[in-house]
Image (cartoon, rainbow, N blue to C red):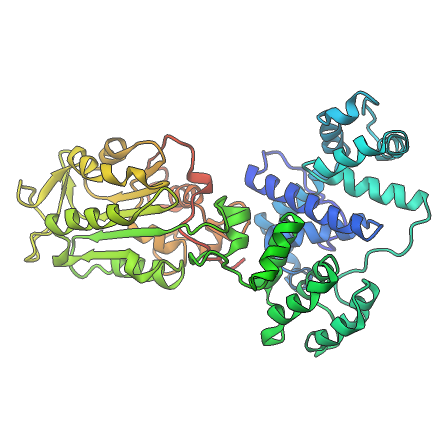
Length: 493
């Protein structure tokens, strides 16, 4: 971990988070394919690039971190471990055993990498079509990467894949075969004379683009003369698409458009993290209800959704204090139900007094206690009012009232996640609320280290650090909480 060139020395005695393992596998596969295009594979460089992708930081930035943080940060260590697990012989064996096109030609029962790659080399000579298709389809990508290293080395392949940095962008782009006419337009990236990880990723991608479209890509990306970290992420996203789809995006002028469908979420985030279509508008609606005047958590939450999670301002309805009446709530539900579609997500946050299976609204004059038919609704009645919203693709409901976990069971349903987490814990996950007791830093909510906080991570962390551990409950009948996010707000690592 310390030098980013060796597997972690830690003994992992627990199961790594599946999201981390999946992202590590995807990253290994993506960069392995990229390296194979250049004709050689450097396993050390592959591990570093995959690790950088998983944690969302450049290798240069990671190397600048204090040794203590490298050794003790569980997010970094787990990501490093997951990358190396994806590159172990056991993972390679698993993929080969589950590749039907190859299984009839050999049984990969070897434990050593050299034996596996030798058999692969023999197989590609005897059955080139089957082996080629299989290598392309392997999920983990480790077999393709390591085979490339073995096959190229035994066939006197030239030049190792360059490490990040250490040479000017101009020189590296020329080595990658990009024409001088295009390379000269990369000069803004050579301002400091050294290529960083995001610039290298951009040049690597550019070299795979059809020559007639390369200048268009440079023109779009270098409008401001730099390649940002988010643009580095975007390059990874583009690389993951079929060639024809990439070319259409370039022709449409969207190669550097981080949010292709204009829904306020980066295409990289939608494609790799949120598991939603990057080219379909995924609307997000929110109803923030806080019946106690002057508390402030509702105001903070509404601002967070608009300013950081990039909800459209008109899609966030804030009913706080005297505005949090029963009639306004019913009207707001009707308004959202007229707009929401199957591609959208709806978030409703209740914060106020309750009891006997009911929620107490504000009466419009500052009173939000003492439930009556005028200012209260049973949670089962609230569930009836929410029924028109079931057409939305996903719904998140958080409740904070004296009713305990009664609303969790009453409001549970398909494609709904319901939890009795208070509004201020949602704010805490972004570092936007006053720290009290054991409230952790925002980055500690990001359990899988992907840079974003899912609803599942929010629930687990809130329970861990709350005054009374495990006091919150959650209902998730459709199992969507791990991949449910409010937006693409990134927490600091």
